[in-house]
Image 1 (tube, one colour):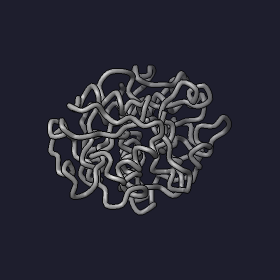
Image 2 (cartoon, helix red, strand yellow):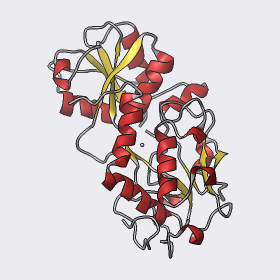
Image 3 (cartoon, one colour):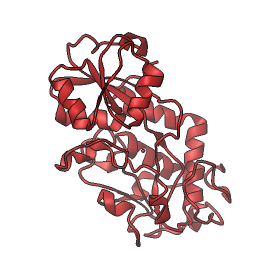
Image 4 (cartoon, one colour):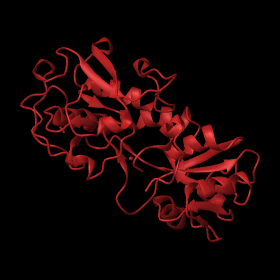
Length: 292
């Protein structure tokens, strides 16, 4: 996925998406999983960081800022998955909440070449080799999962686990990681119905031609919020095999902050805090329970 479909609520028709050292210590190497080749900072001490505005950590994101990534279109409140992640990273770097400033940055502008008005940007931006040629990325802070969408009141709307979907007729778009996940993880008894375009799978769900559809989780949020009335996310699950799609924080090319932020992200992962944030905002609050 090159752009999570939630953000296509601006009016663009959604189509298929074809995602250390603790802060304060020296961070001289990037963790494996970083998509950046930027130089490491000499020190991650707060007063040694090179910032857009001295003394302030400036974080960019788009507007509107959609749920569940943000809450009430307000990145500053610390609510929603990405707002919570941004403030957790800021805290690891030594910044208090009032030392964080937010800049409005259109999605496409965030990973375009050129000077940036942010220290890093957080906006469901998938790490890709092409983008990494012109901007730097942190290591991934979220691995995109698959979402199962069904109509409320349907036979599979209350499925508690993947085994409950064995007899379901599942719609999915051709050539996607979602199709691979249906076949390798859910393994339904019936061959999934495969559609050329995602919108065709969505229409099949609307018309009750399939019991459920499987799309990446960000798209599932958009489907239920804007495309299919009376639908719900039955659950989410991790795809297996292949290279996972990950969202990364975005930096101006060559930023010395990358290694320090990687240290912060790594610390959040190893402590379990990042997983707790994901559970709170993408599972519990967003109504997308983990399914196994």
